[in-house]
Amino acid sequence: MTKIKVLQFSPHDEDCGVGKYQEQFVKVLQADDAEVETTFFDSSPYKTRIMSPTELDATIGRLSEELKSYDILHIQHEFGLFSGDEFKRMVEAAKQLHKKVIVTAHTSPDFAFQFTRPGGVSLRSILHVVRQKRRHEAFKVNHIEPMKQADAVIVHNQSTRNSLLNYGVGEDKIVMFTHPVPDHTNPPVSTEIATNLNKQEGDIIYATVGFLHRYKGIADAVKALNYLPSNYKLAIIGGMHPTSDEVSFYNDIADLVNEQGLRDRVYITGFIKDDDRLNSLIRESDVCVYAYDRVYYASVSSGSLNLAFSNERPVVAYPTDSFKEMNTDGQIVLAQTFAYYELARSLKALDVAAQTKTVKEYAKKMSWTNATKTLVEIYKKV
Image 1 (cartoon, helix red, strand yellow):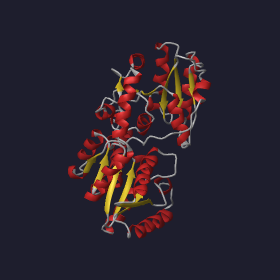
Image 2 (cartoon, rainbow, N blue to C red):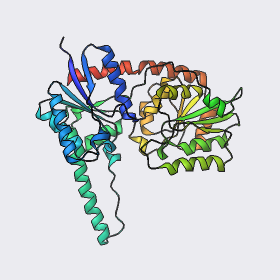
Image 3 (cartoon, helix red, strand yellow):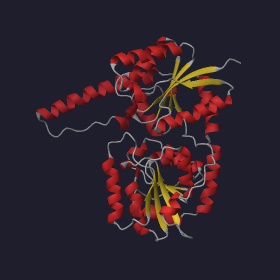
Image 4 (cartoon, helix red, strand yellow):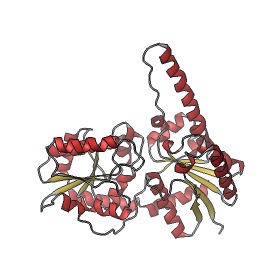
């Protein structure tokens, strides 16, 4: 049987959640060696978005040449990954060669471009409106129009689907795809968190997982400690993204811990590059919490959430639209509302043993190995 050949354009071998997402699929596909042959194009969005015009021309030329021996170009798209018209040019290059294009859209257009109201009717306000309309037109030309040209657009939640439909992407092209769970691994046993939190018998450690970011509710996870018994402790697993310019947020969290007298009950691991270490640290916790922002995570799926499932840890989270949508098996314990008192209430009421069983079943059903079979069917259909 002739194999389907897929060229992947995505971050890879980089500290990027989108990159790690697609690396999992490629790993399974390459190990399977059955119906699909695939590899990554040697460049990535992190490189192309900072290239000079001459360098980008040469890269698009190499992409076109390499694509000649492939059937499909599969692009991982997140609006922050593309600074100019790179995405548009890649889709056009594939179409000129009569190749199929699949785009995985990781973020909703409605979140990526939000109109802001001008203050009054001054000349400055009028100029603001004009500039905003120009930026929006460029946004549509460089992002939305290429998605309209794609043969399939994979999305992970209803919010992103609805936004793409409103922008005119064909309903027949949009494919709903639940974010997979990484396959179960056996990382080395760690005692780092237990040591730094002086864990005693009866202590319960809950953890946040992923890069420190203002939308991830880290502050609420800290404040919840004030409404929990003293045997509850918090591990903040992760640090600042290497390219982040918001280091002040890290200091804000450290200040909050200090001001509220919680230094003995909070440990921050800092940036974690090694996946085995990350998984080991998650397994030191009893439960993972995701006190995510209501607006941002209405339209964004979380890869770090699935790391908790992969490591068989119960999850307590705020009721964002995307979490409510994916909670088909009761694998997430959702707080009543977006308040850290309710986060604490949910943690105290959690039946860890029962929820761990639910999580294990969900992780098995939604494993990356099983999800890859669905991706292969999408490739075959296209």
